[in-house]
Image 1 (cartoon, protein in one colour):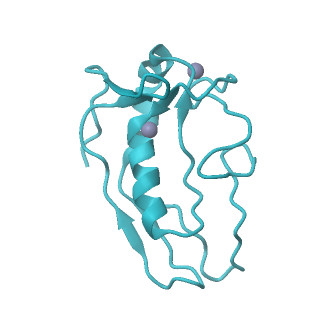
Image 2 (tube, rainbow, N blue to C red):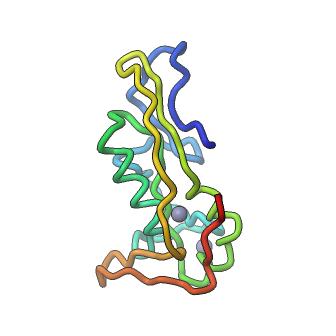
Length: 133
Ligand SMILES: [Zn+2]
Ligand SMILES: [Zn+2]
């Protein structure tokens, strides 16, 4: 199980950083880099499951370090699926100084999918089977 919360013994910080050390604002960095190949990309393709996890966590965790995952293309998402799907496992947050509770989040069900940010539709990929937990 992934532990994404803060160490309760450390001072509380409202500043969160993404995987490349950039500040996170609403789960996003100022520069969008593809989660698959690290190339610069726009926000057209976003992992729908990471977005679901982000929303579920944002409801309960005030200052979360969960980063939303954008991809440069569907191809890149599919090519990196085996690695990326590990991110979709159950996760926890907390406890922190402000909130003593440990919040648990389930793995979103279903096939890997991208949310198309301008067409506003979900693209599901048969080749992206979820991990079994
Ligand atoms: Zn890519
Ligand atoms: Zn994802």
